[in-house]
Length: 132
Image (cartoon, rainbow, N blue to C red; front, side, top):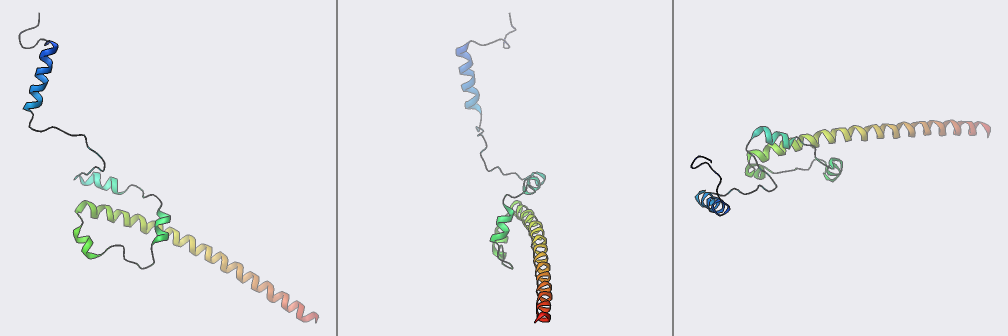
């Protein structure tokens, strides 16, 4: 036999005890739903450093020299949002730099190809001019 107060309750008593504990609880906890917010700076930095999807498409839509935000909007952002914006801008900056390098390499290849064609045409023109 179990000692008094520590034994198993009968099914009817268990339901009553559960109802009492719920009624006695000052607040009920709810399951968190996305988006999740945290005040932990390490967690915010970890989330903010996550790679942004479709950066190349984003860079394509940005006009050169355009402002991405205004001073008034920045004043309205919370610290967590500023941290996330800073990391997003850092990723955009890196991706834009890489794209600029690719574009400059493509331009140099085209320039080189054009120069070779001009030289070839001038040689052909000179050879044809000597024949005539």
